[in-house]
Image (cartoon, rainbow, N blue to C red):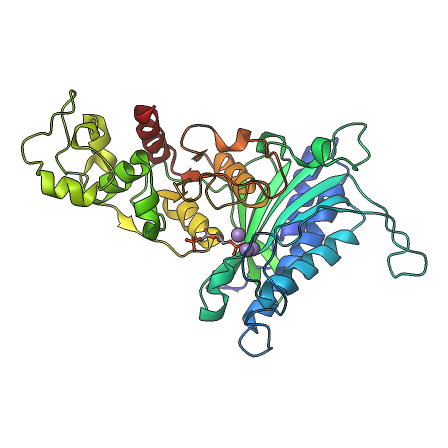
Length: 389
Ligand code: AHG
Ligand code: MN
Ligand code: MN
Ligand code: MN
């Protein structure tokens, strides 16, 4: 048929996870079944998104703000119901945590006579952001869904928030996200690297298109909401400034401004920072072997900004600042899943001062600042934080 003939031996997400599970003798197939529910949720949300402008699913939902204090979109509500219903009846989930719900949902046996009457709680805790980037829904900009999966600790019956749910990312067994963008993609890590799949809309199947994804160790992009600049601390200000003005003369080791550094520029570019503390070590100038300013890209949907960072490199940041001392992004269903994927793809993820994956949230909707992406670029940010200590 020639080299252009259609591929007939497709590696679907289910085929791929089954074969990965066979390689791990102890695997029961439970994770694959849980992933079937998650895949279905993502496909359903994707289909709602593709019809969004026509099917009366855009706009604000009636009712007040959610537990986050945010306005709730109709698609937030629908996506949450889709994930909840599919996971609740999967027979594999024990506890479900959603951005949209104040409390965790502890799965119980389905009532007699219901279509899932034989479904029982399973052994997995799933934390999810059903629809990420809600402010972008109505204007046709990429959005996504995010999930993290823990196995219940040995001997646990899945009834304790403290023991079963409020756990660091180092205990995650899998994490992933779906991107509803120029195509629908699903990126997944089950502890053995990261794989990217693309939805074939005619088959309704995710097909393996990006095996063993690796984040470039350096990139030329920084991604941050610069509208928050007036609230940033000195390390963030210094980092962003360095991204824009890599050649900007800084200061010598004593903090004395170097020749060429004009005080007026300093005040404009570093409104929060006294001139003396701007020193950037010589090696920090040496990004990519050039001193070209980096490009700014900021979609405002974490999934889209993170996916671009995984593919093209650079740093995605949502740091803590003076008005949000814990940042904006939520630990359990935004930060930890993305930190897990990032590290699995050879990247780095930090709060600025600590490895993000090691954070243990003290409550369900706890937040933290994060920087994630190319290992060397994120290390540069960490160094700037250390210098502030
Ligand atoms: P969500 O839509 O799930 O509430 O998440 C929104 C998050 C995240 O997607 C994005 O990175 C960030 O909010 C953008 O916030 P700003 O509008 O403050 O930049
Ligand atoms: Mn929200
Ligand atoms: Mn989100
Ligand atoms: Mn959301």
